Structures are given as C-alpha cells and as structure tokens.
Length: 359
Image (cartoon, rainbow, N blue to C red):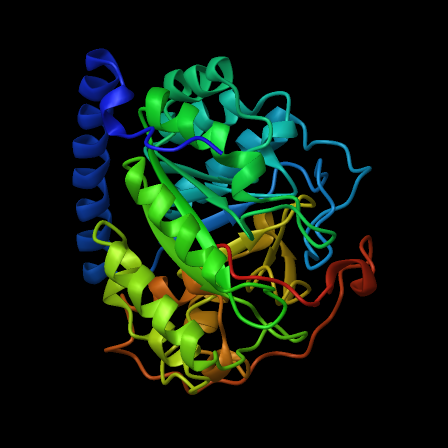
C-alpha cells in the first residue's frame, strides 16, 4: 500500500479548480440550508438509483443485483425534472454501482442544469484518471466511498489495499469533494481498520466519516469500549463533515435510542430504479408510490408521520436531514397501510437485511 501520497501531489490547476468548486458548492449548500429553514415544503436530499447492478457482491449488502439493466437516461432526466420541480436541493446518485451506468455523466450534468447539488456514492473500483476527469467536467460536487477493511476478505473486497490507488488518483485529480467512510460494529473483524482508513483519508486531504453497522433490521447495536474510542477519534478528524454537528452518531455508538423526528418521505426521499418513492434504503416498499404520482399532500403527510423505526435508526443521511426540522412541527400521524403497486410485487421491494450505514 502506498504511503505519504498527500495533498501536495495535486497540480496547481487541480488545486485551483478544486478550490473554486468547493467554494461554489459551499455557497450553494448554505443557500439550500437557508431555504430549508424558511420552508418545509420541498425535499432537501434525494437518493436516486440509476442502476441496481453492481460489480461487487459484498455479503452484507441488500441493495444490489448482478443483472439489472440501467435506467434509460431520458427516464432518469424525467425523474430529475420532477424532483427539481418539487424544489429539491441535493441529489445523491447511488446504487448498485452508479459508475456502471453508461450515461452517468449526462445524468450528473442534468442535475447541475436543474440547479441541484450533485453527489454520488460509489465503491470506487471503476475509477481511473480518465474517469475522474470526466466526472470533473460533468460537474460532480461530492463523492463518497465506503471502505470496510484494510485487507479484502470473504465479506467485502472494499479494502484499503484494493482501493488505495484509487484514493491516490482522487487526491491528485478530483475537483469535487471526496469523503471516505469507514465502518464499525458487529461483523467488523478488526475495528482498528477503521482508524487506519480514516487517517489514510485525512493524509490524502480527503474527509473522513465513520458508519455503524445496522443489525438485520437496519437498527443500532452498541459498540464495545475500544470501538467507541476509535469512533470518537475518527469523529474528531471530520472537521469538514456536516455529520459532526449531529449527536445521533454518538447515541448510535452507545446503543442509545435517539429522540428525533424522521422526515423521510418528505424532506428525504429514496427513489429506486423503478421510479418509486421509499422512505429510505432500509425501508424499501413504503410508500412505494411512483414519483410522478407523489403529490405535495403525500409529502406533507409523511412530514408529520411518526416513523416506528426512528428511535433506533442508524441511517446517517436521513438523520442529518432531520436536523433541519427536529426543532419544529411535532409528528402526530401514523403510517398508512402498505399497499404494493400492481405492477411491482411488494416482495421485490422490501429487502431489509444486514447492511451498513454508507449514506
């Protein structure tokens, strides 16, 4: 594994464009937060899936297959237009592995054309210098890679050994912000790996966060004493990460229930490859309504609906969105009964399993 490949290896040109994009994106993020504080009527963050297929098969993951076709780019644009018309601020492209989509750059460009912030979650295996340059020119603003261990094993190939070269390329060529997410919790063979991954990311000038493994229902499990020490050290490294403002991660680490108001289905949406709206990646199947038919009244109802899974949730992206509204508008509605759409059986939508918090 290469060592000492730090920020100084980026060219002056890359540093200029990286700084320019960072400042531009940060200003847009601040405007998005101000808009969200003024009005609760629009989604703040949306995860959208352009393909369910992945080039890996991590045993803990329930969000991929090895056969799905990519969503047609025109259909993706239609969905993005619907989201833009709702007033959505941030789009994160996920999967599956989004880099497998042949028109990914055009999807990113369309997000930017419609005035939304463009992010992506990837396993990183398909990144090359040329591919990073293409993402630069498409206008990508955020990229996250989750790394599970320092050495590949039978659970996950997303290791520091296999991805360190990709991190070097990102440090040298990426204009966009790059975050490396490590993991702690049950199933992680050596928690020290998370600390090594975090320090490597920071040494390269990238940001670092830590996720905590869900149990089989997507709920929290407390960390052990040494894991908590590692968790706290990684959190202190996250100086540029929005997640440092959210106490929920500290509660999750200790197995404590968190008192918050989940606004999934309203301020946060998860749009699957079939174009259906779900609460999040770990509650796929509800409401299970086509994005084109998802009305402002439906969003408003979910805004006021108390979610049964909220107190022990570990899905960080939804928790972070919740910060915007935890201080206002109590939730006093109950979820509606699940009614699967005729064309897509419920069994194909609900796939809760043993997964990790990458978002």
